[in-house]
Image (cartoon, rainbow, N blue to C red; front, side, top):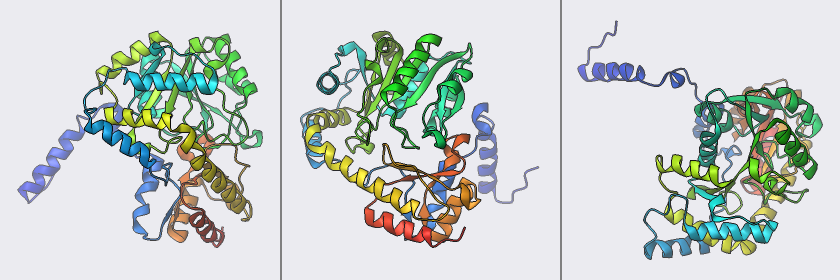
Length: 401
């Protein structure tokens, strides 16, 4: 029985308990994500060095901001077409033709309010209840819940460090069942930094054709390939008809807060996505779409400035890690993340990150946040200056494990 002597306080507690009962059953037992729990510990230290956030420390190029502002002042503050601003759709088509010699029709391009939301739309457009989706683990942490929220079942296929975190075709084939509908491929990969070569893409294409699967490509770090040149999966023979490609302006153009991305797929999928989107947000933010137009037009002038800097930071940080006993990391291949091996410390990934926050005031993300295959690792985002990265690993090197 609830005992309460303050009527206002008592009413609040009763209301809270009652409202909790109305929460959908699938959320009633949900726990905070590992990433959310890690974030909650960071506020206690004024000198904390945060290596946990995949948000760039640069600001969007001023020319993009000013051009978008001028467009807003000129009247671009209304809904766009639910499919997206036609001008942005055409700029994306031009980019694919120029960069990859790939022809896209307008009906194959959709503008989404971020690639994260784009993933949700893509999954909703193809999944029936109980359909299985292959995730290559470690995987970007939202994937699993995104699959489950859209009625699917996530099936993890481990990618091992001793294999370069590459996709193992034998394990992939073993995970496929009659209910498998799709697989999600993130290239280059957050969190491992692995980049997939043409042979890997060809293997995935072969498996997709053999088992009649859809391949969802999360290709948002395409400018951060350090070894292999980036090739769109969609360009492989027969793959345009069975792929859904997600792109974003967040990382390549330093536009995380603008929340704008794109989806490339066949018209039947785009039409379905448009129908779903119209009943959720109707259209991506118009001003953000205008900013994306200007980003594409300035692409040749702004890209290398950022990617070159992040490449330097990632390789510098990898060198620092490999000089610390009991810690190691593979040579970076892509993204601005490193997936550091902590197994020799004897700590699990959550305990390791807690120790680093409390004793070194350095925040990272436990590897278990990226699936069971991520245990024994932590993710480092090299999204701060080289000076700060150096200080962070000076502090970590001083810890006793």
